[in-house]
Amino acid sequence: QVQLVESGGGVVQPGRSLRLSCAASGFTFSSYGMHWVRQAPGKGLDWVAVISYDGSNKYYGDSVKGRFTISRDNSKNTLYLQMNSLSDEDTAVYYCAKVNGDYVGPFDYWGQGTLVTVSS
Amino acid sequence: DIQMTQSPSSLSASVGDRVTITCRASQSITTYLNWYQQKPGKAPKLLIYAASSLRSGVPSRFSGSGSGTDFTLTISSLQPEDFATYYCQQSYSSPCSFGQGTKLEIK
Image (cartoon, rainbow over all chains, first blue to last red; front, side):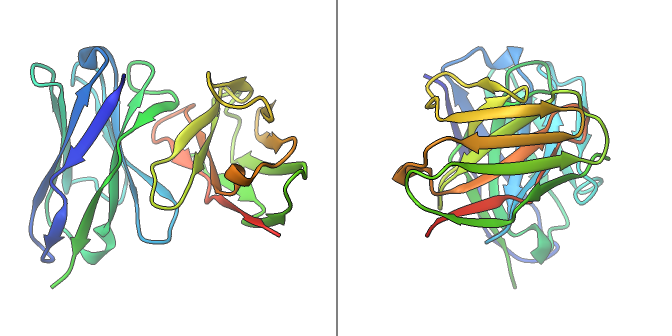
């Protein structure tokens, strides 16, 4: 069955960096677009970034553009999110999510999420 | 960017009630509209895609309708496990965007 397992979250000081990973299994990872979506405590869902199935197309939300980088390693079935210049507004649970297509479409599977806390 | 607006933000209902949640897009998204259910501490789950297609395994009491800019999610007879927060999301164009959520609570 499809599994998405995020890791790499934790407590980080403002201005520092963190890299999240999402290990995928149970499907042909290299055939599907992947997204990162975040949720601040007590708030709604906030789309972060998307990468196409082959990594050739990447798009970012305005709030993370220029600071975050999405990437993937299809040989390792793993999605990444490099987060730089973190601020307290980036504190959230970060989910990776699979789309049933190239890079757009409904999110048919989600990971369990990893919590990132930005605090001094 | 396309803005998604849900109403109401919260809703109190009883087991067995029929409830409807509305989602409006700031421009036409044809039928590129999806609905998710999220329970506390859990990841969202896809319920409805392409405005009205029920995901496999989702109970038939859930249904979706609409096209263009106005959409609805209907739960025909609320069950105890349906009390959760519901989000709409447009997948018509990037950046994709979510509604602010509707929290469905027990009356």
